[in-house]
Amino acid sequence: MTKAIGMAEYKTVSAGVQAADAMVKAADVTILEAQTVCPGKYIVLICGQLSAVNAAVETAKTQYGAQLIGSFVLGNPHPSIFPAIYGAAAVENIMALGIMETYDAVSIIVAADAAAKTAIVELIELRVARGMCGKSYLMLTGEVAAVEAAIERAKSAAAGEGMYLDSSVIAHPDAQIRNAIL
Image 1: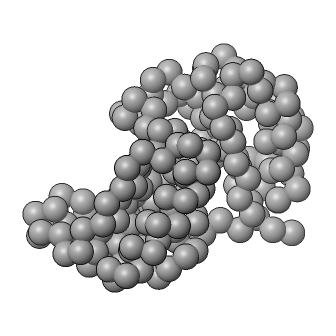
Image 2: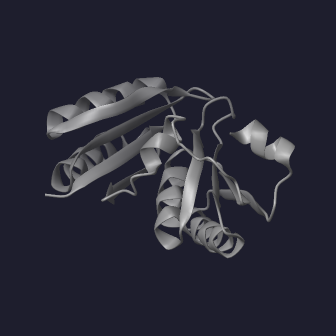
Image 3: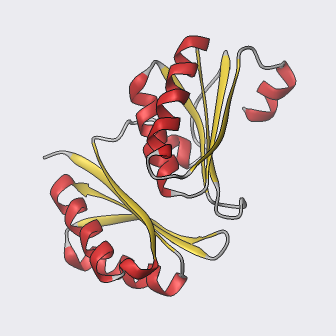
C-alpha cells in the first residue's frame, strides 16, 4: 500500500478540468492541485495509493490525450517534494546552490524527486509553471559534490522527455543571493 502522486498537464483549461473530473471518478484519489498555470495550461496533481494513482492518470491520458502535454506517476515520492512545491521548505543554510529549469510542469517534479533521491540535498523550491510562461524550475542545496550529482540526475530525468532547458551549480553563493532565496 504505497502512497503515490501523479500529475497530468494539459494544453487547455477545458481538457484539464474534464481530465481532473475523470481522474477522481476513476479511482480513489485526492486532488492536491487542479489549476491553471501560465500560459493558460492546466495541471492536475493527485495523491493516493499507487494503483489508484496509476488508474486515474491512465484514465486522463486515455480520455484526454489529444490535449495532454505530459504526465507522471511517482510511487513513494521524496518527502521534500511537498514543502518545496508549497514554499514551505525549512532550509536554513545554503552551501552550494543547484538550479534547473524545464519547459513544462510535469518534468520538474519528476526531476526534483530523482535529484532528492540521488544525493544528500535539500529542495529549497519547486516553481511549477506559475509566472514563468509555462516553464518550471527547482532549487536545491547541499555539499558541492552532492548538488552536482543531484543536478546531473535531474537533468537526465528531464532530458528523457525533451523538456530540460538549463541548469547551473553555484559552489558558494554570495550572502545576498542566499538571503534572497531564503
